[in-house]
Image (tube, rainbow, N blue to C red; front, top):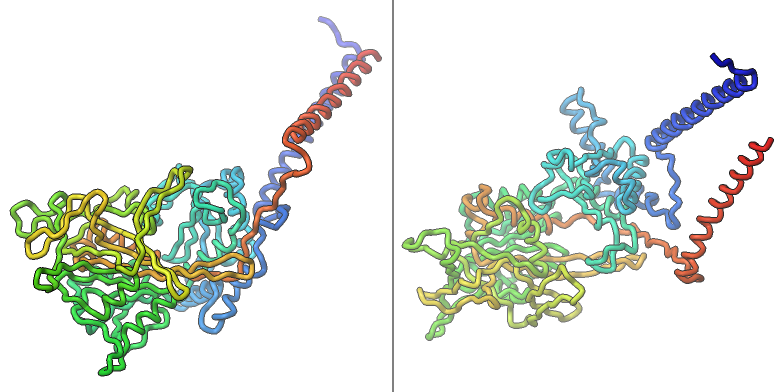
Length: 570
C-alpha cells in the first residue's frame, strides 16, 4: 500500500480544514440571512427607495385613520375609535372576552412570496404592511391561498363579487367587508390601459377601512301616504341585507333623516304634492333637494296606476317616461308587456306571457351594474311580471356609443343625455325585453319589439358631479334614479325570498353600489417617476448594457487564468 508523503498529507490536512471552514462560513451566512429576513419581515426593516415613497403611508392617512376626518370629528368616530368602541361593548357584555381579537383584517388572496414577485401587488402589500406597522393593535394582515383553498374566501362571494381573484384584496371588520381588485389601487389613463401612471394605494385602503368601520349604516326610507302597498316584507329584508337601516317616511310632514342615502317610492297611487296655491307642501322640492345631495331614488310604478302628474313630470327631468297608450278618444289606458317566448306560465293560462324573463343590458352603466350577475354561476334569470315599459323623455337627446376600433372590450349601446344650467344627466337601460316581446293595451298589440328596439323595463339615470382636490385629482359624486314599471319585480317573496331567480341579487348589487361609501378627501395619489434615459438612444443603451455585462466578466476570467497559471508554475 502506497504511503502518503509529508507534503501530500499536509495538503490534504489544510485542504480539509479549508473545505470545512468554507462550509461553515456558507452555513452561517445562510442562517444569518434567514434570521435577518424573518426579523425584517416581522419588524418591517425595509427602506422605501422609490422616488416618491410609493408605499410609505403618509401622515395625513395615519391621522385620518387614528383621529378621523377633521370636518366630522365631533359627529363621527375614526376607524381606530370604532375598533375601541366595539371592544368596549364586547368587554361590557363578557369581561372574559379577548378584546385584542377585534381588528381590521386586510386579507390577501395569495402567498407573500407570490405578492413579492409582482410589482403591482408588491406595492399594495408593502402599503398594507406599513399600515399594520403603524397600527399593530388594530390592523391585521392575513394571507389566503385561494388556489389551494378556494373555500377560504367563500363568505365574501356574494352579489357583485361572485368571483374573487388571487390578486384581490379584502378589507374586513366584523360583518362588513370590501373586495378590492388590484386595478383599484392604481390610476390609469383609460380602462383598457395595462400600465398605470400613478399609485393610489393608501387612498384605496383608507376608503375601504372607513367604509367597513363606519358607525352607522345608511338609511333607506320607504315613503308612505301615497297609497304605497307592499305584498310582504321581502323587499325591506333585501334592503337590510344590503346594509341599510329601513325607515318609513312621510315626505309631506317628516324631515328626511340626515343619514338617508336612498328613498324608495313603491307603487304609489296618489301624486306627490308641490305648492299650487292650495297647499305649501312641496314633496317634489324636498325630493329634488335630497337628490342634489349625492343620494339616490328608486321608483316602482304599476301599469294600472293613473298618471301621477307632478311626480312623473319630475321623473321626466331625469329622462324617465313611463309608457301608456292613448286610444282614439284621447284616453290613457294601461300598456302591459307580453313576451310569450320567455313566459314562465304555460300557454292557456290567462296570464300567459305577462310573467316573463328579461334581457340584460350589456353596455353603458346598466351593463356595468349587471356585469357580475351575467357572469354569476348561480341563477341569473331576471323575472318581470305585469310590467309596463319606459321610454327616454323627449327633453333628453338620444345617443349611440360606438367603441374605438382598438377597444376590444366595449360594445355599442344606446343612451340619452341632458345638460342645462351647469349640470348634466344621462339615462341607461338596465333590463329590456327580448326582441319577441310586444306592448299590449286592452288586449291589442300597440307596439312590437325588435332586435334594434327592445322595450325598456328598468333604467338608471345618473347625475355626476366632479369635485377637484388640491392635488388636481377629482372625486366623482353621483346621484342615481332607478325606475321600474313592475312592482312585482321587487315585492314578491317568490322572487326575492329564494335563489331560483336573480331579482334579489340584482337589487343587492344595485343597493351596495348606491350605499355611498365614505370618501377620504385629501389623500394624494403618487405618480410614478419617469426613469427613462432621454439622452441616449435605445441602440446606445443596448450597447452600454452589453459592454458593462461582458467586460467585468472577461476581466474576472482573465485574472482567474493568470492566478491559476502562476500557481501551477511555482
